[in-house]
Image (tube, rainbow, N blue to C red; front, side, top):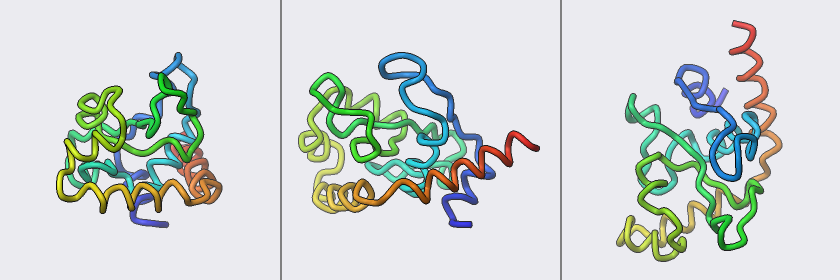
Length: 136
């Protein structure tokens, strides 16, 4: 079990299907798979259940839906509620400059690395975690 999976197993994680474009825009296992892929932490600031008990994770569209972005895994990253609400509809490059300053290039590279990963193994791990929670 990865560190992220251990955090996911023990943390209170909101895997509710709600938000963008109605209540069922992202299945719980896909949401958790993206959280696992991104190490259970906001890709922008690093906040997550392992660093803060009050952290609320959500998904952020790299290219917002309003600008033609999709709900595919490659367009979604883990984001804390604070960063997600601050970013709003801002272009990713502009947001990285505003929020991350000197670390913008490093964070952009991390996002590129994460979104290039195949979600299948993370989704299998997410389904197993959800099944254990349901059985418990």
